[in-house]
Image (cartoon, rainbow, N blue to C red; front, side, top):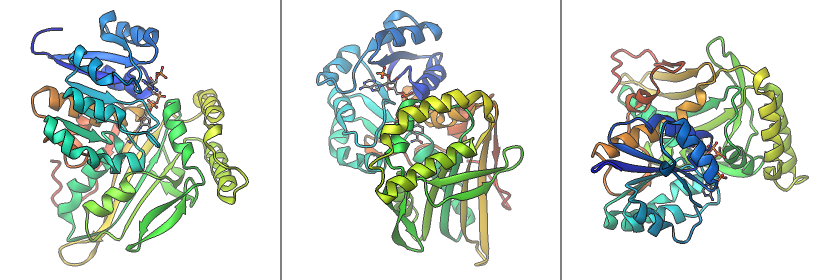
Length: 378
Ligand SMILES: NC(=O)c1ccc[n+]([C@@H]2O[C@H](COP(=O)([O-])OP(=O)(O)OC[C@H]3O[C@@H](n4cnc5c(N)ncnc54)[C@H](OP(=O)(O)O)[C@@H]3O)[C@@H](O)[C@H]2O)c1
């Protein structure tokens, strides 16, 4: 490792999202990348593909009780944790980072995991490191979009977020995570009160611009449902829906959700593997386009209703790069000597939309910023 270089270890580095992040960081000047996971062969194969050496690959288990001393020995400055699912995971990796005085970022989308990361705030501050959770589409990008548009509202009353994927299926950890809450109850903030809803039910149809068109979306249990009502006081509703490129696939997951909700099936989690294999098999037959929206409603300075709908459209199966933008951007920031304040918190207010999209330049993505009188991208 070159003297003064910043050493970054990606745990889950050859996984679906880990690999995209590794590609985005492999050639950053002054950054020394280690790719890690439980399989040394897979890590080594990726290191070579990225033009790195065998020393840049490590076999490492997230549950290793000696993780802190391994990180210290390797001289890791920043660790990116992508080894999900995070639903039900404890903070062993983050604690090891604090002990080793290593900055920690993760891609978590588990609601309890991301919202609870603040419990590590005091030890992270004492160690002088940042411990940042949800450095991904949620809540990093979603909150950055709302922050950007907040000045155009006198009052923001509702935030609705939706993501519809393209054909390319993410990794098994993602599928396991989202199937865990399929048909299970959780709380959402609606009309200024917490109400119960169910995972992958309460179907909506969202009309994205052509050629994406209408997509089916269902409810998901994500950190934003807790974080955004707290971040934007006065907001009376926050919702998050997601869906798949295949309408039949969506209806199948929805049917499973009804089985779980009715008690006929205990959990949809055991079906994650089978759904993953079917999804992979269908990839070549499905549209390669996905999209995301953040719709904000409220009032303008004249107390008139205002709706701003921000959208990000992805073509050529480039949608899966979006969740990786925040981790690439924040790691670059840390490596350039500008880490967030020491402490542990969800990834909000640390990156602008522009910073998140910057590493994704050159991909088939199209940002549709809403028309507002004096729109300025920060
Ligand atoms: N917040 C958001 O907006 C957002 C968006 C997208 C994805 N995500 C999250 O990102 C995570 C990663 O998703 P993915 O699709 O990339 O999953 P994936 O392809 O299954 O990758 C997971 C990686 O972690 C490794 N891994 C698993 N258990 C491990 C352990 N105990 N120790 C070390 N490495 C381990 C796996 O390799 P081995 O099994 O060989 O060790 C694999 O490389 C998911 O939890 C997903 O929910 C969040």
